[in-house]
Length: 289
Image 1 (cartoon, rainbow, N blue to C red):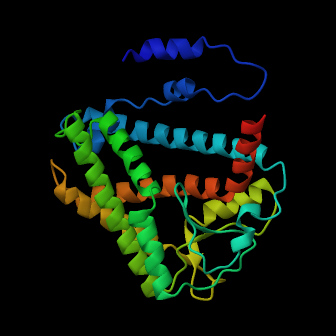
Image 2 (image 1 turned 90 degrees about the horizontal axis):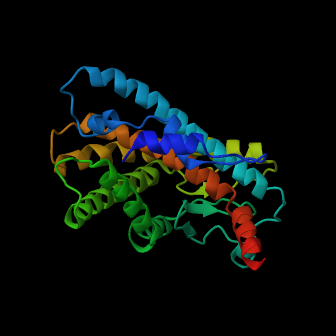
């Protein structure tokens, strides 16, 4: 791919007076070069790549922040209308219902009081999140496609069979992560679901969504605790997944990469989950017009 041509086309693209999100501009502003691919694949041959890696890591972080800002601007437009609770959920407003969205996972509507889950309900939630909700397979395919595009691991080529190996590897990692997280939350008595903020205002709700990516509630369902099981599960899953992947085995690096991925994806998923009723209403209105 000729990156200079793409960047030249992006630079020459006229912009209107309104707010516009141009994916090509974001890609050109963030030099996601081969240094990241070499870092992911464990290639440490030339020392000159180290400076490239650090610069690319900073630029990639900046890209993630720009994407997050874009999401916030979008949901701020969607949240202009106040939705009185979750109208679609009102007939089943009870905390015993196990709600799992295909994109952002288990959640509780804002007008439902949080009550501790029983052991049976936790098992139901685990099975839904890990095996029976099609979102886990969509999420796995999305990450596997990213691995395929980055040729990671490089020992797996770009064929259909290699995509299958990447898909199976990602699904195994996610299943292990869900298993450790569910077991840890059960042992600690922590709340595994996301609760939508009982507040108003875009920024207050956004803050709640981002903070909830790092804290949860204990068995009182009111006292906050750090998401120990959540990120311990991500760390363990990444470390274990490095064992069956080809190439050098580095459990620690694979573990903390899994944690960083969970931080980024979890934050975005929480924001989308927080504003999901407004987004759904906006999309439905656009479809009817």
